[in-house]
Image (cartoon, rainbow over all chains, first blue to last red; front, side):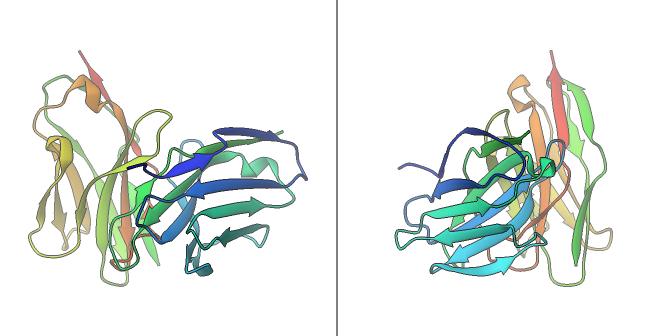
Amino acid sequence: DAGVTQSPTHLIKTRGQQVTLRCSPKSGHDTVSWYQQALGQGPQFIFQYYEEEERQRGNFPDRFSGHQFPNYSSELNVNALLLGDSALYLCASSQSGTDTQYFGPGTRLTVL
Amino acid sequence: AQSVTQLDSQVPVFEEAPVELRCNYSSSVSVYLFWYVQYPNQGLQLLLKYLSGSTLVKGINGFEAEFNKSQTSFHLRKPSVHISDTAEYFCAVSGNTNAGKSTFGDGTTLTVKP
C-alpha cells in the first residue's frame, strides 16, 4: 500500500514565478491537508481539502490556493513567489472524521 | 487560538540514557495532542496521540507521553534511547479530533551519542 506521495521532490523558482505542487493521498483517504515548514520551524497549516472543497484555511495569503480532484489527489499553487516562500511543503492525508494524518516526504521549494 | 511551545530546541543524550522532550500548550478549547518524529529528508511520522481517557499514552518505538491538564504539558519520554532515535521531534495540538489543522511547535532536535 503506497503511502502519501508528493511531486516534485525539489524545485527551484525565481521571485514572481508561479509553482504547482502535487500530492496523492494514502489509499482510502479522502482528506488532504497542506503545511509549510520553514527551515528550523514546525509545520504551519495552509489549508485542508475535502470533497473537492477547501474546508479549513490557516493564516496564509490568497497567493496560496489549492485544488482537490475527484480521485482525492490535490495540488497546491503559489503565485507571485517571494523569497520567504522557500520551505518544505508537506502534504498530509486522512480519512474524514478520523484523528490521524499521514504525511508525505515533502517538496523542497527554493525561491531565488 | 492555540499555541505550542517546545522548551528545548536541542537535546543531546548518550545512548541507553533516558530522555524527556518537553512540550507546553495553550488552548481555549478541548485539546488533542500529538507527537511526531521527522527523520532527515522525510515527512512526519506519528509517534503517539492523546485524545481522551488515560493521561499516560504509549506510542511506537518505546516512547510514551503524559498529558497534564493542570500544567498544560504533554512531555515525551523514553527510558532508554538508541542511536536510531536521532531525529527532529514535533509536538502538535488540535482543537478537535479531525486530523489536520494542527498547530505545531518548532521542534526539538534529539541527538543520541554513542
